[in-house]
Amino acid sequence: MIGVFDSGIGGLTVVRELMKQLVGYDIIYFGDTARTPYGNKSPGTVTAYARQDIDFLLNKGAKIIVIACNTASSVASEDFIGSYDVPIFEVITPAVELSVMASKIFRIGVIGTRATIKSGIYEKKIKEIEPNAAVYSVACPLLVPLVEEGWLKKPETRMIVKKYLHSLKCSQIDTLILGCTHYPFLKEIIQRKIGRRVKIIDSSVAIAERVKRFLEKHPEVDGGLGKEAISRLFVSDVTDHFEKIARATLKRNLSLENVTL
Ligand code: DGL
Image (cartoon, rainbow, N blue to C red):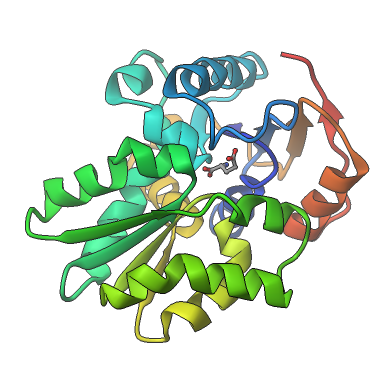
């Protein structure tokens, strides 16, 4: 099974992409809905939660782990990832690599939660590849609750997106990384507000491509993964609201299983 976790149900945008690109692979998902959001917690707390999330998925039989949460990925150092004996993927690196490939003038914008932006990880990784890149980062803490409320097309949401993107627009970026699980839900509005000439990098698409390429190159790992299109979705707190969002995201009738870590 491919194990995927997030602070809540936003990581289902990654599951949706994995299902699209790795058709039929068994997937087990854990959404830490009881402790969400991670985005305004300290790195120490997020790391401790991420360890528990990974251990849960491994105990359930996951053979590879995808950290769908940008916040958890941003605090998950190479040491942390290397301390497990299964392949672990974080969402930052694939999005960074795509953004550097896509940008023509190396003026790259990043939006994410407070914790992700404060970590400076996107900027660090972009500059490792392209030292002359100018990186402009903006924390957008109001976007997660707006998405979770389903306010995807409201004028208030458009206004807030516009306000958050204002400085990025003035910085004349040509590429924008959506550094949060929830932002793909707002891709249309973000594209309209930042302008059509800015290329948007969706980290859920980037990570699914990365996992697919890895499995093509590593048949020894691929062979150990079930391919009966089984998907099990666990959360640490089940509510009707989350169930509704999960169904709408994956466009299928599913039920969330409750688990206490
Ligand atoms: N999953 C988080 C992320 O991608 C967003 C929600 C949260 O703050 O926990 O950063």
